[in-house]
Length: 209
Ligand SMILES: O=C(CO)[C@H](O)[C@H](O)COP(=O)(O)O
Image: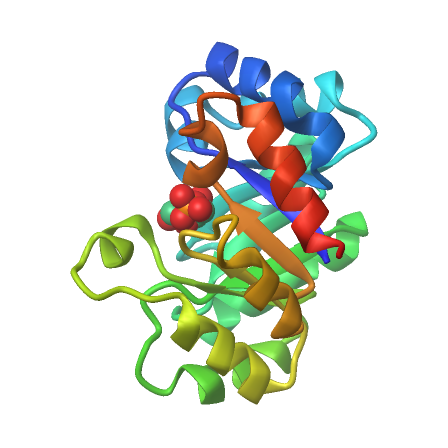
């Protein structure tokens, strides 16, 4: 299973510093949505230039104009982008068309799709995305009683390639791997750690056990 670090910081210098600290232990460097919004699409190019050996993931969370927005990120050097799994099928189709044009990957972020999530995952997979990200966002995670377990169960049931995002930590990444995830996404567990490099190394060790 691959490990993806979510660089959920708000400026490019901080993102470059964090990427330097963790890159040797991760497979994918994600520019978090707040980073892309605050630093601009040029941050994708900067991260890719600094780490050309790593896959760069632009978490656009595109909700409209899928081909246009995905194309912007691919032109900037992204290897993967997100389109929202909850939006119009034509928006997803457009992002997929851009992926085909650039030879890059499109990931459907299933954030906020809770009821009927397995069925929608299967629908979106048929639209041509490379995989789906079964995802509980920061606001959902903050609610009392949140558990990653339902994400894992839906991944097991859906039967399509998936990643998991939503508070992946040292004590849950083994379950993420056992559920059959292609990628585990970790943000806070890495960037909030006293030593992000050591935190990423420990997660990677458990991701590939
Ligand atoms: O896309 C995101 C929030 O919308 C985060 O990048 C994602 O949830 C991973 O971060 P964490 O491990 O802290 O949940």
